[in-house]
Length: 376
Ligand SMILES: [Zn+2]
Image (cartoon, rainbow, N blue to C red; front, side, top):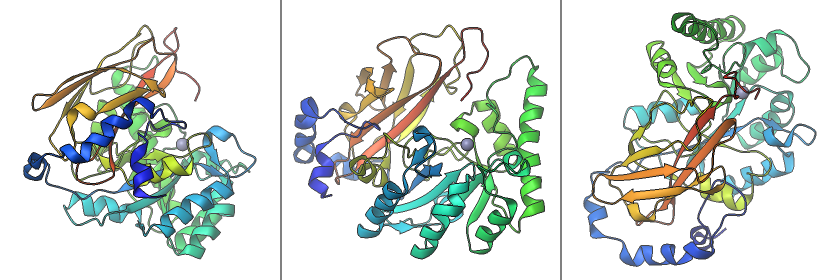
């Protein structure tokens, strides 16, 4: 895919991006690229992209799978376009320490340690000599369920250099307090993290102190807990990772059937973090009666023009108002009432100093009408 074609369609995070009315916005961007961008306070160019897969198989649910053929096509794209594939711990440490991350750096992650990670992913990435990370819910492995890898397979992968990391014991919706009081809820969350790490430590040599939030669901009290426990956390909101990212809930691009086209993949792996100084509310957890919640984003300067930021909610356009005075603020609201479950907001803007896209995403979580949590 050429840089020109990459720039011609705005990434929405979804297949079939709407491009017709926005081509002219993009066309003017390079011509109007302001010298101000060069003197911007947004100095750091270092960033990387973390990809998140689940199953790589033909016979598993499409919503959490890519086919082996599509996975190969993704990996071929990275190889053919000179991407550096870094171990996730190296990417995290380098960004935290303010070190250099080369352009086109990607880390590969696989959640839940499904059987196909050992059967399909491991041999393919071994052949390429590429590192990857598996986030394990230890309870699933302890139960010996066929759909998952075994401890022995995880040990084999670890011995070959694969990073194994923490995805809780039971893969709960950790943000859901249910009928527990606050203290009990946070105690359970702590145990879910600490006990999983204890199992990883018992079964493996050197599991990483990295934690992937089950379902990509987190909230500020849980993020404070994770920071206190000294883990780096990962969500499932889209976007690139930079030194100013929130290391308790770093973004990853989820890849699954329907959201795995090569065109969108090519845009995602080259994306840069949209510099959002503040997102309000800090928590995406809604009450059951929430209808059209407002997200306010405070944007920092960078090599992009705030007025070119476009946001999408659940794949469709969002009601967006922007105040372009600096710091620019963006007010994003769904055009209709949100349904139960997770709804993702994707905001993107074309860079003025290159052909990449800046990307930011946020996830609303809305429980069932009776306040109970949805099932997946
Ligand atoms: Zn998971």
